[in-house]
Image (cartoon, rainbow, N blue to C red; front, side, top):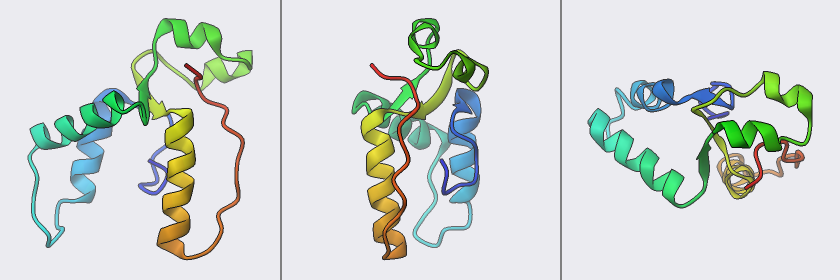
Length: 106
């Protein structure tokens, strides 16, 4: 999400459509919206992304963080947050500053 320069968290209905526009002219092939949705569902099933629920909002440790989140937003899970950092290090071939995870913990 951060690589795509969209905010994390992101409204669920925006997530796949935005990813689809990023890959629009990719010479490796085109994918349908249903394929993006299926990939999104796999990331949620693997618990790398989460869809924010009302219960999640109540469990946020920092009450001011509730202003950032909305029900049905998509965000990294704690594991997804760390994997994202590792992937960025591989892409840029340099260390990426570790930032504390401040998202929804399940």
